[in-house]
Figure (cartoon, one colour):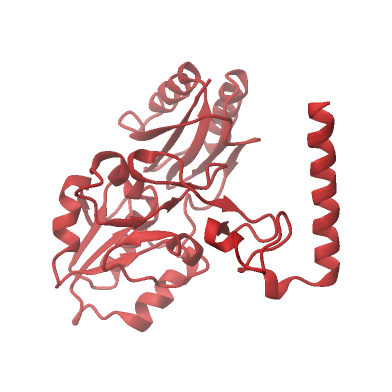
Length: 297
């Protein structure tokens, strides 16, 4: 059995958040849907998984909400449940930039369809920026893309202030996993005086789904926030795993490092591994191995 993984977001003014949260939560529980849905007055953002009919059902419910009739989503498949829990949350932002005055419902940059993206980012006058966090960029990105080396999206405005000038860099193209960060980032860039601001519609996931490997300018894999860890061309599951110690994606090459110990540490966190933390990790590893053995007995 395979599971449908659906990702979606939309910037739209939403009212009566508590009532909508309870309605969506109840529907997801009834249909055994797992994952996370975030609601805010500025819109909705979610990644969920379930059986095909269940996903179709919840998407129909969401599209019945005022302003969400044209909600777009992206689908991929997983061979095992990618989420262990269900969360439906109300937050101040559906993607946290920390600047409430930045409102994509008021202004955004120019959407670029996946099939037109290569032309935009191949233009030498265009500054291409990956708006994701550093650990995501490490495992894959577009050719020519700048890595802001941020640990959170809140750091993005500081990166722009220190590295770009609208009088020197009038053309900017941005991208992210599903499109939500770069859409909000485009609103911020316009507010800072940048004139030509482009962002990849549907994000990297839509690009990998629609652009053939022969034509693709993507290099590496794309980190996703579920148990698949990463995907590649055609949204096939990638080769990365998560380090139990720090949560960073690790490759087969990382596993060859003397700093890698299964379920304990990897090259990303080895230097921060205190004896106390290592003891806790080893205890958790024994517990997982015991549960696995009991399940197979």
